[in-house]
Length: 115
Length: 109
Image: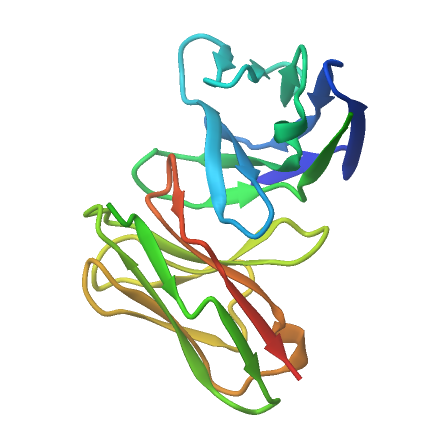
């Protein structure tokens, strides 16, 4: 069975500082990995994904994540955060094919960016 | 360009009452999902439908039923609501790059 663990429930950081949100997964089969972001009172939006190919994936707003198979990790990083990055972030895994199956989510990490 | 639409957005029920949460998607996706979100627990899968005409249990199906009415619509029913079902419910479509609705905030008193 799949499981996803987000190692920090809350991460406070000052504006323009770097941030890392940690995610570990467990799966005995090939896995696809995702980061979703949830702004207050909204649904989840896909931030970035790893399906295959390059292990470093990027989003359009400056976040990046690296798939590390040996450490079973998919940590999310941003070199300089903005106030608008304040949100809850969810790591998720999908085992099997990309056209079927079920997403398994981590517990979420609340990122709070202070001025 | 609505994406995934959920109704209602808010609901308060008394213990023992029943209700149906509606979900519709206009993106012609085969798979649809119902999740519940509780603080500190992430999203947990209640039921899913891999394609029209099929439904399967997820991680927390007890107390819920679903209907995949057609390719567009996937409803979630609470037959006898309990306080433990107080949560935010999300419908989603397509398993990879999932599209989520805005959520239904349900309170059972």
